Image 1 (cartoon, rainbow, N blue to C red):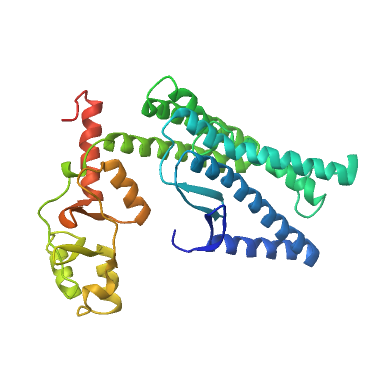
Image 2 (tube, rainbow, N blue to C red):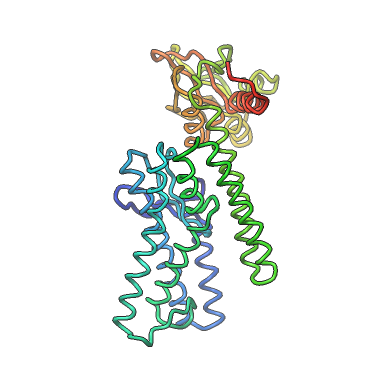
Length: 363
């Protein structure tokens, strides 16, 4: 993710923080400073950092169980809204998804109970459970927030863990797509109810409701796309008529091809082998920064990801998401034989989805 910086690794999994996370910490420190002085600023900042360490451990619970099932975890990203475990694919079996989803809340519950026990042993019954960052016992505050984190994530709506747990239970007796549709619908109903309650009680519940509502819709759309693309080979939709560029061509030549509507992304080849990819955004950036005469090899994406003609469109879609690419070269025996684009995937999905809704089968 752009704007993210790696701060370390846990069990071999990179931990990154987004620049907005650092700005968020600085802003909160200033708020604490003005409200309660230096002592409050130090305690408040340390508490927020401890909270995000708890969030990291929550995501690590998901990640380690996912890796147990052979699912690659590319990173754990920390954002102002929380943490995200970036896994390459959804678990294949309902039981696997249940355990992967449950691992996060279970980690938070264990951590909350452990911190609560330490607080009780240290302070006795005088320990407060107030979540305030400017008063109360630091450890008991952190225990309370971890338990709240677990409870929040068990809400039955995407993208929280509770939505995935609910889907995994449904998927044990029906198709994954159907289970997702039902779980998403339940999540939206829950979000509407939560939003109505929030209007009369706490405005933050309204924000959570909006988050849940759109998260459920997005999850349903993602699964519909992956279901439509599942099992379809790349050779079915790849373009076999395409324009290649040489590493020594100028950017102006690429811009000319693109401006004529021929294509927008170009494989860069030498002796029939792919050595790079030049995307539309790369062309525009190079024209702005270097001018029209800069050589393609100076601005292309070297050693790009490639796909084979018998790979599935679902795999291609995931690969495009991973590399933030709008096109990928299709290679067979080290020679380029086609290009598959995000646009072609979109067209295939649109017709496939429309056909399935109308009762037609894919040919």
